[in-house]
Image 1 (cartoon, rainbow, N blue to C red):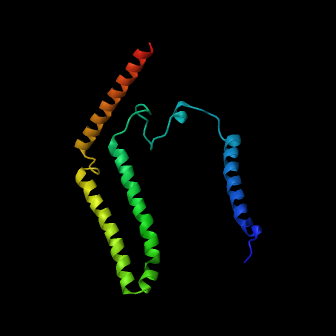
Image 2: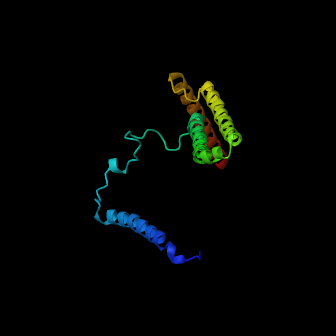
Length: 158
């Protein structure tokens, strides 16, 4: 088969239509949309709640830990889906290969399960009152530390 660039023309056309649709909607909303700017409309939207505090607040390490756990389990799915797709082909090569592929994935899932048990034992998913108080205390300590650092910078600059 020879390479023909015009075979990719439908893909290019799809990208052009998608970009045109996005740009067209943005421009249309700018020309047709209402211009009444109120204090409520200009306020940041946070899941239906009024924003409280500064946007520069520090978050508890627990939030980042949960994000990392989420990424870990996403990676698990990234490995499980292709494995499941080729498992039938691997199993067709013989009982030895089928057992090897199955055992390999069970070791992988077992290690992830051990990690999950470790996370649960450490209390990463504990969002009870005690954990909330600890997170608030940690946030206050970080805010005090940041305030002292800023004050020290002001003194050295003056």
